[in-house]
Length: 206
Image (cartoon, rainbow, N blue to C red; front, top):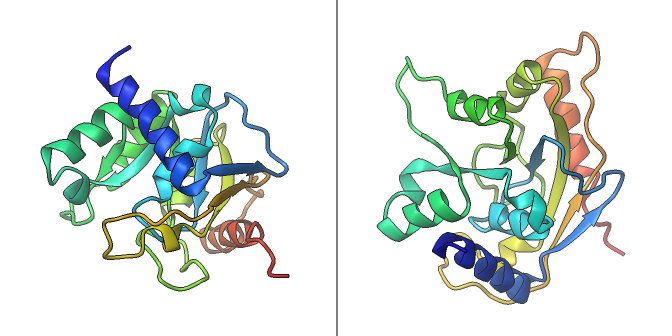
């Protein structure tokens, strides 16, 4: 077992210890099929929580999307995201001749699953912001890949924006039934429906 494997097991254990990292599967089973998991985005811990909530056999082939400028800013962050999480790096600032989806397309073409946040940035509000077009274009290019919505609950209280020390609070990830593209559906309608699929998984307040 490599040092990266050991670190991965340790981080999964710590994430579950601090947050519980409970995964609830509703209309979708944790199967070893290629998927794009798309979720609401409120914290730097979001993709760590999804990764920890997945069964171990799925983590190996499920790669989170990580902002290159932030996650390569220090040697440890770079090693962690590259060797442990096998992250797909994306540039938050780009030139006109760059395709921001190119790294994601390469990962999907290689058979990997992805964890993405279609809002593009973290939201401090309860509802996710409108989804950007990347999810639509990936679904268009890879129709065989399942699109699985997910709702991450409570993680913003574990690691609020600007904080560096996590607070132990129970968190959950709810995975919903795969979203199926409809014939002739345009980009706007698809993205609205995808956002609604994520919102539908939010726990109801009693």
